[in-house]
Amino acid sequence: MTYCVAMRLEQGMIFAADSRTNAGVDHIATFRKLHRFEVDGERLVVIMSAGNLATTQSVLSLLRQRARDAAPKHILNVPSLYDIAELVGGILREVIDRDAGQRQSGVDFGSSFLVGGQIRGEAPRLFHVYPAGNFIEATVDTPYFQIGESKYGKPIIDRVVDFRLPLEQAMKCALISFDSTIRSNLSVGLPLDAMLYDADSFDGSRHYNIDEHHAFYRELREAWSDGLRDTFRSLPPLRL
Amino acid sequence: MTYCVAMRLEQGMIFAADSRTNAGVDHIATFRKLHRFEVDGERLVVIMSAGNLATTQSVLSLLRQRARDAAPKHILNVPSLYDIAELVGGILREVIDRDAGQRQSGVDFGSSFLVGGQIRGEAPRLFHVYPAGNFIEATVDTPYFQIGESKYGKPIIDRVVDFRLPLEQAMKCALISFDSTIRSNLSVGLPLDAMLYDADSFDGSRHYNIDEHHAFYRELREAWSDGLRDTFRSLPPLRL
Image (cartoon, rainbow over all chains, first blue to last red; front, side, top):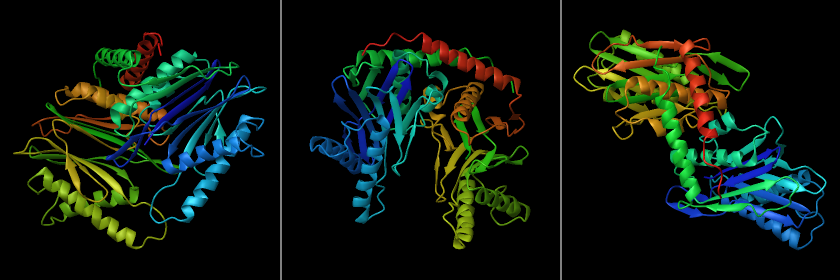
């Protein structure tokens, strides 16, 4: 599995993804799931993927290939992020139609994508593209999306995140959400890809790799664990 | 959906279940999922269920009916809790074979059960009966099982619970696990059924109903929420 989370907040956006891909627990590998597409000062697009690896890789390869081949509509020339979400959904359908046509087994070819970023002239936007190729957009009331193994890490986000949360705080919350997921589920694992995007900066350089030796991630995990345990110990005595 | 959790700890056991049943979000109803079977001073058995309501109700009806009709082997006379888990698994298969034989739709008839308690002569034991009717037993290393919508509430249990945790602490942890689940998932809802069982007591009277007006549950939720937020605020500043 995979776990990815993206948030569109007042100050900008954050993105985080793990890098574990598995088919069963024996066949584990590391693949990046956070992909950046940039045109200097004009557009910055981040795509994160969960689901069938063959499908997600094909979608990303076709997105890149068509931009290189200057297809009429591609990820680097369509005028809005909405159009990019539509593009991703369309290519996803195309890939699934192609591969599922030869279906020989009960394999699930489905994939989900988070498509976020900013194109000059628009505010930052964030879309969740479903396996069917349709998509929804994040709003002020629902400023974040998750894909993949999302349930373990949802409660902490639900408790902490709102649209006005500063980016750095939001990233800490995302990292805690990953830590909770990784502790409870074997199929999500380090290293993490983490990216902060400041609105209107068109700058993708705040992009970090977090592995098990990352000092701050370790410190954060410990501080959170200790805080939770302290909070738990100081709860009022049970009265039922 | 449903969420149920049971723990088998040094001091005894705890059980907790929500009571929401739904088919889609329109058809919501309240059904108890924690069922007690007792023989004074001799056996106390708790069964909690998740999954298809028709299947779980049939399994429980047949368990009761066969005890009443004094079938050769029933829940009140088999000599061990292992035998009860086997009984539940067997009846589950029987019900699914019966109902799925007439399958007219893509409905999932599957159900899972947690079967716990104590029979005189044995220590308290806890089993997880899978939809296929086979089952596993909780151990000192894995002292708890969840069924139903279990992922949201798993991280807090993974962080806090071990075999030596006192019962009252374990129940607080279970209630927090429910609160996290209820906040993040519409299909799990109050009231909760909560039960503490002291080892060797054969006493099922510490069984409580917790609804939205329950003073301690409200206090616990607030204390936990406040504690989490305080912990979050006092985390070290982001350094990536």
